[in-house]
Image 1 (cartoon, rainbow, N blue to C red):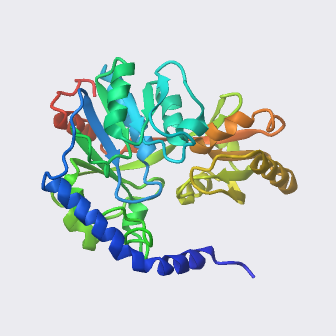
Image 2 (cartoon, one colour):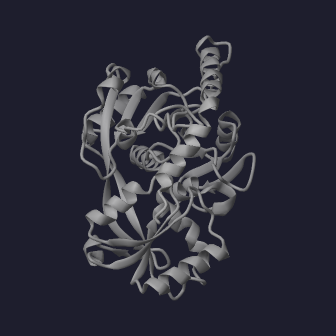
Image 3 (cartoon, rainbow, N blue to C red):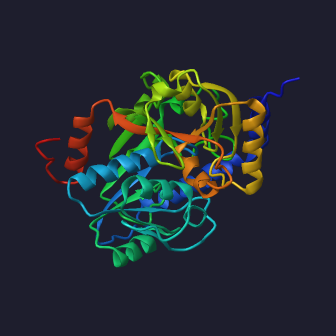
Length: 362
């Protein structure tokens, strides 16, 4: 008999339901204290841009951070990225990169910041306290702008621009259990907190654009809202760094390995590219692979008689350390980029909020 994992998860959500009012009350009190200026944010000597969301799980924060980082670099900003470093094995401030050289490994700093550094080649650090982290990052790098990855709820630091990103699929979510607060649902705070956002991005990933449900429209009505999606840019050989067009993987039988929060969009993208996704190994989000996991991948790869292993870019940065163990297996990650449906207007809005004119060629 096939186990319905969704029903099991929903059952666990119901068990945690009595804790929801407690979480909601604590969150409401905390936000009130900030709104009433009883708790105050601290300013640091740099332009601060926060990227965050109202939910747990994969809304697309890291691709948006990568997009903004590269955009600001094009505009000759001296930009750095600061993250909490969720899931890392270290604590406190850790200098990840000076922009040209990595100073640590993926397990010590976390997979998201490690991926961002690989993508953007900028100074980066992780720290639980964004204020302390920003100050130390400024002391170690010649920068004028810091992008905070996942900092919407971290209100202790002043920001010049607050960007909130939602996964479209979550807004359309039919299950009231998933729409409620933690620990039962996925909400970190109430939808009314959208009032703090300067710009809102709706990430439809690989899906068609849909209207915001009527029950939520009041939270977005007075806001600048932009829609974005993922574009599959081909496959990259994890070991050789060689790029291949997507068409070369059409009809290919692969073992799909995923350790991300919402693998649904990843599988959907592969299916749209006509990649066979029947053989799957799904791990938890922010999974740091162990030698035992690698043996599991090897075993299923050979048992399924597939052509290659296909994974996400987030997983690829963690699998790279096992090049030797995977030497006889071809492993690729799907390269994706965040693209805006109205990129020109989005860029205009970003620089307007920052009080700077955009370039004529943008």
